[in-house]
Image (cartoon, rainbow, N blue to C red; front, side):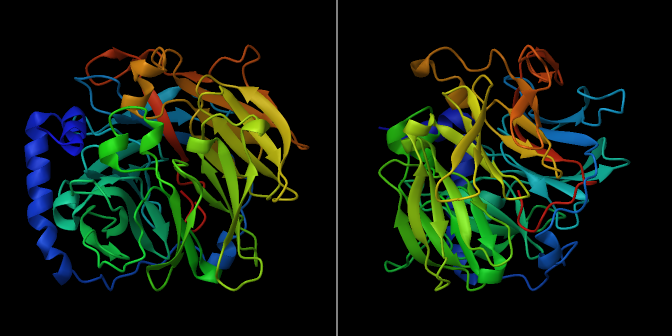
Length: 460
């Protein structure tokens, strides 16, 4: 009888790929003890103090979108969209950067520390793709593909990449175990995508190890030497379709430089915490965390500066939250934005008092997912694809892929959300996109700006 882990992996990778993926991952696990941490640390483009301030109000030139092909024959791709209204390509898909293989399930992605290369993980394939960004940012060239991450680390399901203190870190949602737990964080080479070592513990743990048990997002406030990682749930239970009971309950607080978990907090049964958004203001030790499983947002604070965070729920279903899957903060610390996947709404909250957010504006988007805000806080981009098995789960109504696209909203100087299209339609439609071999719907998920807009340290 097949285990639930095997069923999940078979559905995602196919029978042939399953045998290979499990074999290489399980065989390599004993090598963990001999793995050393790299000594090379490439400097970031600007210091932590500089990173606490948005750098100017430059108009973004292109929007990069991790896109699920929604096709058995086409690879996933990064769509390049013109984002400057002064240009003729504004609101148009001007390039499609294909992955070299089918079935990666692109989800989150990020930059190398110098923002010259785009690091693109395959959530289901465990592959890391490295693209060099060329010219003015419109074109990319594939420089490396590493398919040994699971084999060499023992972890599976790479969830995005992020730069922290010059290191390229990848949160791994699960491990090559019967339970597909625990999750963890690894470091990769930003030129080759190769596994370089563990950030924190590997998948083989001592009985008294505090964690992390779960992994999804990972964010840090460096001046306080603290980081928080979130939950989601075991890939073997959560990967096959929508199952609220698969979601975990814990978040973990880390000693960042010590690379160890020092505190855990229970945010509620099946809360499934996803994103961590620190308020990036000097001296502030506060972070918002969204929990879609319980339709809530929590605030973590270390206001007494003792290194231990307190957690309290500040938003819930009574505030209009319905499976809030993404969340971000404005760069001026005024607003929190939320996407309610099953509520079909994007919400803007005034967080002048972070302990008591106040609803400022609501806009409609069909099954909204990821958010990206311009550096001047004036343009909010919203995508609406999530995860193939979840988007297409028939147990939760019709497929949520009949109106794929990117929505664009103008944020007023005093708040508010005004749709670029007065009819509320997508700014860029993904319902009929040219792919490598076919034309049809494709699912846009995470978005990044081109390198002309530098990321803050740890931003992802």
